[in-house]
Image (tube, rainbow, N blue to C red):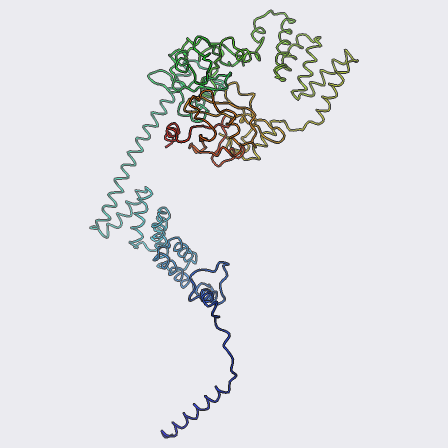
Length: 631
């Protein structure tokens, strides 16, 4: 074909193409991105998207590309591991270390057979962990990388640095030695190994010091226990000397653990709790020497800020303790503390000697000893059975008046053993048994009385009530209901590792004289005793029957203004309330929340069966000192 023919053919083809195009149907292109949504469409395109869609769904194109890169069916294990490694490297380069770790981890999961790529994945992941200060993980991954490639210097150096950070000094020294065999003149390695050796020596020295201190402390504890045993001090719930250890001497009051009895120059120094039933308050004194008269401690406390009438002084008071025989015993405050602790009936409870202080001859003293009325007479009066029966019966009557129904039943039945024909005492036993929920005993006493007097309508009514209550009574005891309610609310109890350890004894207040104020259930609501402690004045308030569904602030408003608060600083708007948590740290609470909400706080732990709170003026020096003690 000649040049002219070729040119003519091209022109002909061009003309035919133009004719074909001109003959096509004229219509607008509709498959492109609309003008009002082109940015949104661009963000969906895998080449232009900046982030994953919020709904997590990728476009078909993006899914296809991802499948090409990450699908095991489309890639070999080596290709997959390499792809994940590249993703990790990209994120590492941009300091997205957590995303880098995810990429390297996915590559490791592939388990390819290439040792070099595996060593690289573990090494790179170790580097990401090191930047995040996850030194244990960095050490693990570095040593894993070395298992694939023992000559990987970067992995060994990072292993040495990571081991140093987590105090694995021997491991650090070992890696440094292996590196120095190849680079004996490397200054950084020499300094790293020297640092590890130095820190190892420091840790060893500190460990020796710690063991020495612990040994000395243990020796001191043994000396304290030995001194207590030598003095013959009786400890509650310790049947013999082998049961006594320092844990039995630890105070259970919050914040008082540091005030445990200690030995100083051969003298025991005790924490002492003075309770004032008349004002429902107390004083806690630390480190009282056993060779100092009790009256010297009381002289430091009087005049008390809460005693407006100034009736409390060392010449006008009587001091009592509750003995192992459950009786009050008056003491001579002129005696040394050590002499009082070895008294015949004295028994140490909760690691803290406790004494009741009342004005001599006051109504408070009378009420205090009323429940023990006639007890001494029962022990020293005539041996005749009738006289003993009369004394038991009289004491039962006093307990009945004080609504101590169980004790009234006990004394009534004691009297009936000595004088079975005393109908008045038997009637009181029947009524006391009914009030104490001892329905079988009540029914038995009623029947014996009816045998003698079958015309007394009151006896038949009492018998019917006892039978009805027995029928309607639930199988569970009230104590079981209380424990169940506490468990349902999720309240943590001190020294109870799990729910099976919790019983009613763990909820009994250990404060002397507070046993009758234990938590109880009323119409489905737990009602608690509460102890408010005021560190500024070293005093406290003890409340009973506080409902769990009532804000704590309402209880505090009942107490303010306080008689001991001379400056009237303590009011609901000017205070802060704290509790000591199970982490041994103070935690501030919002008193506008209900008591029940506070008891289920994250760190709250119930101790001694009594919710306890520290109350201080906001921003005061006392609050600062209180918080500094924990820092």
